[in-house]
Amino acid sequence: MIPRALWPLTSLYATLVATKNAVYDRGLAKAQQLRWPVISVGNISVGGSGKTPFAIALAKLLKQQGALVDVLSRGYGRRSSVVECVDPAGSAERFGDEPLLIAQSADVPVYVGASRYAAGLLAERDQPGAGIHLLDDGFQHRKLARAMDIVLLHRSDFDESLLPAGRLRESLNSLKRASVLVLRKEDSNVEERLRGLGIDKPIWPIKRSIMVPSSLGKAVAFCGIAHPDEFFAMLKLQGVEVIAMHAFRDHHRYSDDDVQFLMQQAEKHSASAFLTTEKDLVRLSPAQREKFSSLAAFDAVRLKVQLCDEAAAMRHLELLLPAGFKRLL
Image 1 (cartoon, helix red, strand yellow):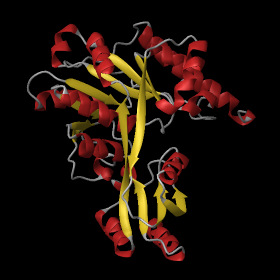
Image 2 (cartoon, rainbow, N blue to C red):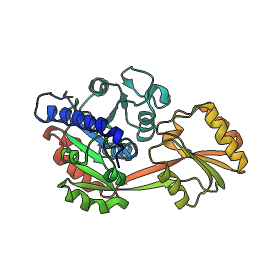
Image 3 (cartoon, one colour):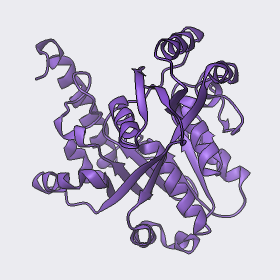
Image 4 (cartoon, rainbow, N blue to C red):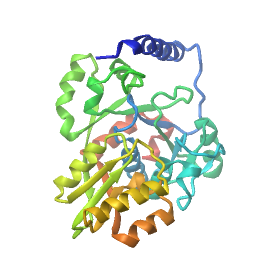
């Protein structure tokens, strides 16, 4: 139920989104075109659909196929406005947590900038030959032309309302604009709901798994992500003895007081380990990590995403890429 006070704002937001999309759909505004094709990876809700691990998996897969690939990102939360290539040894404050994690995990160049077009131009200047851009969190970024839109869905999207009352950036109807939809294997039953809405886009199922260090003992688990309950549940399914857990807001920037609080929790419960996500790890300073490690084992749980049928996905990509770039795959 949408709070009555938010009805006018939600209606206004819906009007603004519809107007922006109509402007581009009718050709009244022209998207900026890069020389290389752009594959957008996005969603329709605020956080929590798994865009980052999927972008990492897709970048690795394209690279394995021999393609020259990079990632373009806004760099949400970064304190720098410079358009630049991410240094994997750099900080989340400078580059943003997600671009930094992608650069560290995918081993491909990642470019950040408020203008993804400017970031793409820099990428094409830096790298000789022809390649493919992955546009991180790009479904709503209509300013940049793309060859295809890959949109990840989360089960909760079907029960949400538009901002600011809910978490949806766009309505489910906007999925008709997508090229491909990505669903977690455990959410495959929502396909019927999509078809009922008249959305018949191809679906790529993915499977997720986590890698947890062995012999942890009692652990304090913490994170600052959109769906913390899923992180804690996955730990318990893997047999981790979670004796205390704490959820911060998404993209939380950890303070020394936060670290002190978590260390107190560990001492209170006689914990032998701290566990967090890779995304949270890059937001912790070296000094903060060292402080955790001085009290107990400290580690980040790696979330791995894999396409259930990689070969079929590659064949689909070949069909959607411009003819001159199909040879890249």
